[in-house]
Image 1 (cartoon, rainbow, N blue to C red):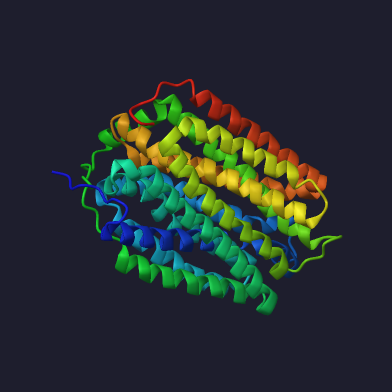
Image 2: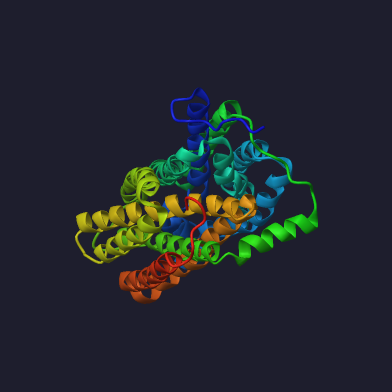
Length: 402
């Protein structure tokens, strides 16, 4: 019989929380480590803003494609080994990125690193659903996403600060050291699965489960929310470095990178949104998060630097509220529909990173052609689609407690 899931206060819950927090921190610090370095990379390698953004887009694209394999593979081979090896291998590639001899090599390594990073996000939510008591699913998901938010902030802050001191190689070397440290923590702290039941390696069963999670209109809407919300979020942050480096601000990578401290707001918002979703329902929380995100993007249109930072903070809070709730919702919805949680989580994150790669990459073009109003227009259009999908999903019949 399956063992009782961990509850807050249990020793296993604490180990699980710390390990996944560290894993999320390392994963997203490494994934977005080049984002605050885009202006410096553009100058160093003599490439355009759009081309410099490939260091982010190729990593997220590699991750997104690999998710389609990692999720189903975890249904057969298990969750914990995949997560441990994912963080460890990605940390090793991070060391090689800091030593990259030229632009093509850096781009290739970033793409491979994205593939290696897929193991954690592909299965983290499915692992939480299996190992944490049902009453604490949304809370545990919120804590994990909070770790990813802190990771995104830490990677950008550390990279920006180190770039100011020693250039982009020093910046990526510091991120590599962080990745190695977190990989050790994950290896020793992450509890082994207790309630995982392996799926026989049957292509027919895999196709059936994949078809199931592609037919559910609620899951399809959640995939769309992932793509559009993440696309808007990354587009704004990809262009922010160029905006702050230009007149009238003229900030270096260290000072410009400080704006990513607003990720702390995202971390808190994700955890709070999880608790609110447990209390009031996911269908109520996601649309509100969309509206908050849109308000933040609009606020960044102001010229004073304090208002730009305020807008980024509001946008970040809204985005992580949406993502923190929606990502956990996917696993619960798929399980209630008959299984395929790994495939559903993988498809959600594939859409999430596809949106990041495509729309985040377009942000460089939007900035080059329309300056900040062009970036705001792109992000606002995407968020309107996010809101429409969030309202549509309210009309779809629920399953159990989703």
